Length: 263
Image (cartoon, rainbow, N blue to C red; front, side):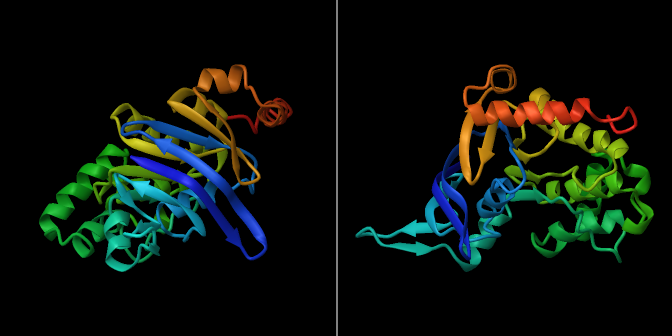
């Protein structure tokens, strides 16, 4: 479903992605872990063409996202309507909820299907109601973002992404902006999507969630994929010293938390 081929991305003098290769199969849940600044979020943004890569390519469902190959070996960037068409098939949920503050939860979820897909308002309303029920917010349909908790806003954001009927969902640290007590309600929605067979690529610092939900875990550091494997292998017997060091530090920090900080 997604193939990253030797992807490189530079911001000014800083190379953020360094020859990244990754495949995500249909129905697979791949969780990316690693320290802050390792390129995890940038990789997601490149897959969704929110950032243009410098070199390499990204293929989504058989179609190039970054560069098209022309006869004779020439490469040209994918632009315009082709980008929009591909992006409509990829749902993305960000760290911040980015809901329209002047719209209710229901209207936020309806907006994409009506404005982008041309769905009739009555049909879009039924879809939005079903999706809000799916994420446990049927009783908050008429609430505005300011009236919702952070966890509730993020669940509306997930429903809004699902309303576009995406083939793939990308989650960029979806719980990082939440109070600890609200993390579980968002992760439970993502777990439900995983159980339904949604193809997902998830960047997270929630190691327990990664171990429970992922089909495959990818560890990134300094712009490179250092190690990839099934959760049991990555968390129980990582092969690379840097992976072992990272997980050891994560576990040590968790153990040093006070009871009130531990979820």
